[in-house]
Length: 343
Image 1 (cartoon, one colour):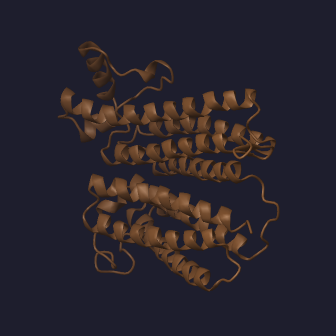
Image 2 (cartoon, rainbow, N blue to C red):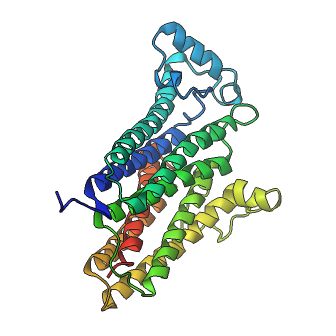
Image 3 (cartoon, rainbow, N blue to C red):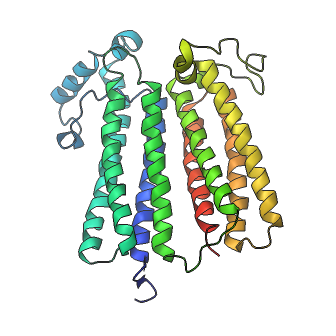
């Protein structure tokens, strides 16, 4: 038992956190499918407890459909939708919310158990408590996002979608980092090298690029400018400017897609530089070097997938794979940033 538990390390706790991280990654994937199938507004009420059960009768299904028929998306986009078609989008949103509830249970119950058994390293208790709070906040932000599309819009506000996805990805990063800390314990000596800062900067860049991707999704910007490397034959789209600065940054289809492309180029170049520097570094731990090569490979695949997805007109399968790739890349970069801090 001593190989699995010590005062600053608990591998059972680490395994639990890795499982929760995997569930959060699944939520990101299902959330992407929910967005791509325009299913996110199918459930128009927030019922954290009673909403865990789907409609159980024909009358209940008709009631849910009647609620959906009252929002602008139905009247302006889907006026001919049948009850059977409504069930198709309803199940995506219900599954996404169910996963959110499952993440909460899988985190909260073992957390209480580990606390009672004093199995969580003292230095990680506050962090796990913060993770629990962040998960609860994510539920509130999810409803805040959905509510933006129930009155005057036919879809959710892009900036709220970005916030919702950003919190999910931040939770994923924090879970992976904390799980690694729980698995290995506190370092006896921290490695004081420039890699510490560069790795964290690259992690921030990948996270920022993911937020830009959320704005692309929220504006359906992947459905326009489907040529590459140009945008309708131009370096800068003619319809770049929106209404004011915020309208351009957050709501212009041309601007958000251009920004996502430019950030992708920067991340790709930075990943190549990291791989070259890792190959030449003498003091870098072998595991960190392997992770540097892995992250470069994932970035390359993600770049190819992004171009393919765009030029194909964002089919659901490719769009989901691209969003999943972003989450996987964040997890790998997190592991890299964590590992270079240790000798």
